Every structure is written in structure tokens, then in C-alpha cells.
Length: 329
Image 1 (tube, helix red, strand yellow):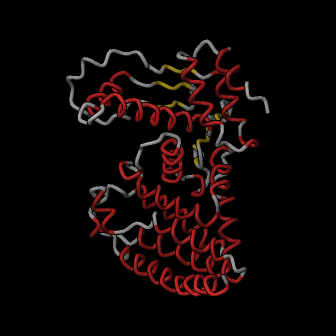
Image 2 (cartoon, helix red, strand yellow):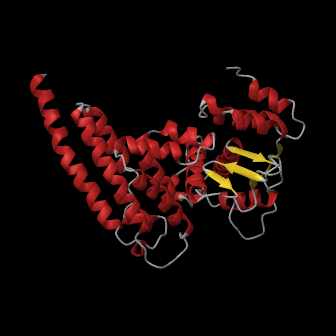
């Protein structure tokens, strides 16, 4: 692979400003894109219009904070990315509430920029049919499977936050989607998520991987449909059981996957899987922490109890394995 591809594309594009900074950001992103999924990013960089506003005067920040990512964004149709001046001044006003404002500002500036660059790297537009793809989404949608905004925004947030040290998913507006995606990643692996996202495969490959654990195409499809429904009603105050149902369904796959690993005597893999999965189980305490009314999520507590049952069941196997190691050693 030619390590200079991105650098050459950026340097020969007169519509990209702050080229050196852009190249550094794109190099971070390119490293996580599977080699056979780089067509979108290379094609889009050729004609990308990018205004980064790195050198703007942040001193005049008299207006109220309205959400630092409200006006910044990537436009798929016009292949343009703007780090909006008003948005950045709002971010600076928020940064001044922290101990080290400059560190906070540049950390989240980079995270926002990488979020939008990730969208760009996963996007393509067909002018003839006026159809565009971004991540797991297709517009206009020809079927319900084309609508995966929650999945797309959640993984985009995961990508951008993992590339920037010090950002915390607990502060993301997509925290619930991030947790559900990370539960899925423990089950099917991250590579299939990245491949699906950057090559616009929708949820097809993800469903195929789930079917390798439990062969039930309807159940696998149901998970992604409900993730989208749960995302679309996130502002609704009425009680619903969708989130609890998603988390409980994913635990069926976890239980089977752990059992298969035990049959293969992969005890260390089981221990790692349970530990990693637990980090992303959505609990009532976590929902309170992000300011959510946890009482509206009917059935969520049942899924938490079920995870603890699975953990306790397999902890007995792992404890027995540990004792055996001590005796044999």
C-alpha cells in the first residue's frame, strides 16, 4: 500500500485548507479502515471542500451555548466539510468551564472533525439516481433495512472517540447506541463492523455473523430494527420495553458464545469476553448518570439480572479452571 496516497490527494486538492493538519487527521482515520474499504475515502478526498477554521478568533463568545456540533458537519451531496465558526466559539465557551480550556477545546475539536471525516470516509453519492450512502444508511431507503441512523451515528462516535485520547463515551448523546454496538462487537468482532460501515454493506454482514452463533435470521434482523426504533424514540417520555428487549436478546447470543468457547476450553477468552461485555451493559445507574429517566425503560432491569446470572454461571467454570491451574502448577 502506498503510504503517500492520502497526502498526495490532499496536497493536490485546492479546496482543502490547513492541509498539514488535515493529513494528520486522515492518517489517524485511514489506519482503522480495512484495506478493501478505502474506495470512498480516496474518491471523496479528491474533490472534498474543507474549511477547518483552526485560526479563528475565539475571544468573542458572548452568545449562549447551543450545542457545539449543531452547525458543523459533512454534506454528502456537495462533498463539503465545514467546522463552523459559531459552533467552535460555542465549544470554546464550554471549554472555559474546564481546568485546562485549551486542552479541552482541541481534544473535542479533533473528535468532532474525526467524526465528520469518518462520515465522509463512509459516504458515496450517485448523482444520476440522487441516492447516497453513509455508514449503514441508504437514502432514499428502498427497504426498512436501509434505515440505520442510530447504528451509523453510534459507530461514528465510537470511531472518533477511540481515536482521541481523553474523550469519554458517557458524555455522548449516542451513549445508548455506543453501548449496544459494543455489546455486538464483543459477539461478532469489530472488523465486520468497520467493513460494513466503510463499504456501505448495511447490516447484512453483521446479521450473518450473529447467525453463526444462533441461526435465526429473523432474530438477527429484529435486533437492528429495534436499535433503530429505540434511537428514533429516544426523546419520547412514555414507557417502552424496546431497549430492555434488545439487551435481553443480545444476551442469548452471549450465553451461546460463551458456552461454545468453554467447549473449546478457551477459558481465557471467556474471561475476557465477560469482562469486556460487562463494561457496556446498560444499567439503571448508567442511565441516571447520563441524565436519562430510567423508569421509562420497562424490562431493562430484567436484562441486567440476566447478565448477572450468565456471569455467575460461567464464573463457576472459570473458578474451577483457575483452581486446576494452581493444582497442576
